[in-house]
Image (cartoon, rainbow, N blue to C red):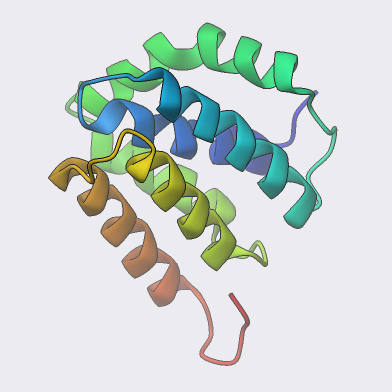
Length: 132
């Protein structure tokens, strides 16, 4: 079973793919790469294989899409972000989000907004002496 942090990370990264309402294969490839890298950086267990990451995405993309497009998007996003707020490696997570957003060659304003909200929320949540 995945931890709450692992699920929140994968949901957040999937939201970047879905934010611009277009899904490109390059974004899904970047999602898998970012998830593989971040689960190691953040020391998340269990370690998921590329196949399991793709399976998680395929199984959960409709739910994430519903959250991103739904009226409770902000509450859902804050819940994901707050689940990750005290995890060391927030900058690495933002970098992963950025890699996914740029994978199709265009940084869409909704992708940029998602990353700005994450950076702002995490900056407010951490003590000034805590490392990102």
